[in-house]
Length: 146
Image 1 (cartoon, rainbow, N blue to C red):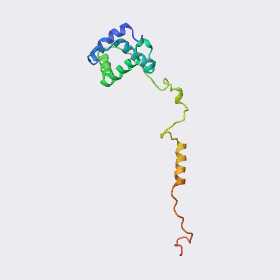
Image 2 (cartoon, helix red, strand yellow):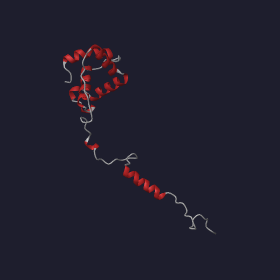
Image 3 (spheres, rainbow, N blue to C red):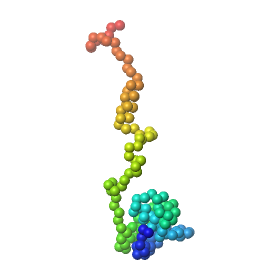
Image 4 (cartoon, rainbow, N blue to C red):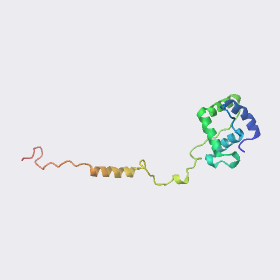
């Protein structure tokens, strides 16, 4: 699992103090919070949660709902005040990998223009612009005679 019993004993009262009250208490709150912790530690998608954490949508729903209500911020603030260590994870660009389909794929759609595409469009627009009628040739500085 994602948390030891000692970690849950320290975290459970904080969660109870911060979580929003509802008609029905959440089912398997520890398992759901462990799923959220596991997902964020591993950088996985919600659907990639192992089956031991229960339905993926339950963890995703709880995380999103609590994020909108500010529960996670209150929980962090309360943990800092009480001196409970929750751990820290830092990510930078060298750790995060792009999906294999993210590299080298041809872009589609109206925003898929590139510098080369912009040059082609500019050349096409210049070629199709209305042309000014050429002036008859005459002596420089004098208007042409009729």
